[in-house]
Amino acid sequence: MVTLDRTRGYRVFQGINAVILTGVVIVTLYPFVNIVARSFSEERYIVGGQVNLIPRGFNIETYKLVVSDPMFWTNYRNTVVYTVVATAIAMFLTTCYAYVLSKKHLKGRTFLIWVAVFTMIFSGGLIPNYVLVNSLGLTDTIWSVVLPNAISVFNLLVMKTFFEGLPRDLEEAAAIDGLNTYGVLWRIVLPLSKAVIATMVLFYAVSFWNSWFTAFLYLNDGDLFPVTIYLRNLIAGATGAEAAGAGIAEASAAAANIQAVTIMLTVLPILAVYPFVQRYFVSGVMLGAVKG
Image (cartoon, rainbow, N blue to C red; front, side):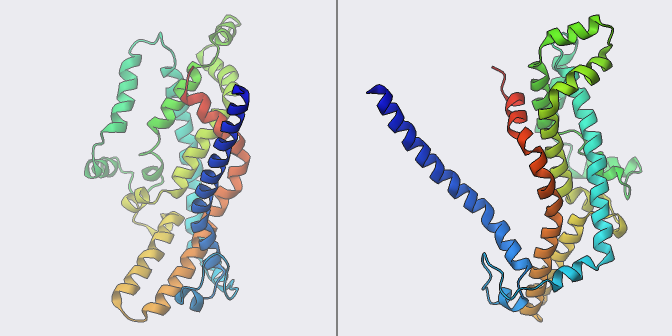
């Protein structure tokens, strides 16, 4: 009878869980599907508020217009470069720092951990950060985009906990065989950490790909802007057109259509990469987040 009750309770839980998760999926997917529909719809249907989940008046002219803009591809290339370079730097620094913090015998380990945690809670502020970057001569360079956010403390702590869970016997055996600290990290630890590394790469890549405020703050040359600034300028232009009061409907419709197209072209690389690292995602976070 107890087993039967548990089975019924578990089935009820599964049903409720399925309903809740289905609702979450619908709420999450709806805005994206709406953007897809708007990107392929004609402007007059967008103005009339007739575009919901299905495109109205199939239109690809806006795609051709955006793709033919040289500035879009310049900014797109910048985003790819910034994301690749920033992710590589962030992974190198985060991995090294996390591996050091995972060694409980390290002198000053607690101090180093609190230094990292302190920066997660307190910040120097926008103006001091700008003064620092400017005084270092990094403005209008790639380094002003990739260096200020090179280490995420959350990612650092996840990797630290993951490294702490690895068997110490493997590292001790490697040390007996003659490997130094760097050799142990490169040949023993990293091959065993593919799940958490893939997860951290995904976190950093998505963060840098979507980032716009850092570039907006430190870059003045339009040829150095990432594609997120290109999109931001489109949104700002649509807002300005609405505020001007002239041709509001037409300007808003065109802007909404172009924004949707640009958003689609911007998120496509992330959507293409995500399936290849998704299988590492859950295991990487769970292994690094909880130590039983």
